[in-house]
Image 1 (cartoon, rainbow, N blue to C red):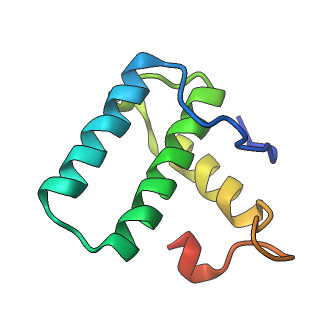
Image 2: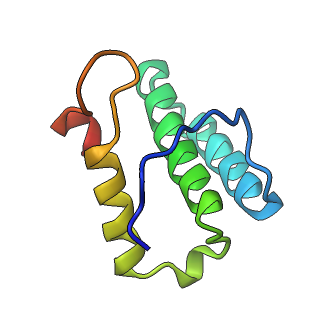
Length: 94
């Protein structure tokens, strides 16, 4: 299931399970009172991962294996940077 580049142009998740995970994550971020600067980036990264899972029809987090994580890692290391030319920086990937 090697991933090809795709545009994450959806503003929301369609799958209710993944949508619920994102909502729970957002509540956790607020409950922990994390810095606003970091929260937006964390939320964007989690949302991008969940959108990628949805695109690949992976709806059960309990069934995600290391091969899926390797595929996602390959996707983010090869996808274009949306703010400037080139790919994502190593710090963004981390």
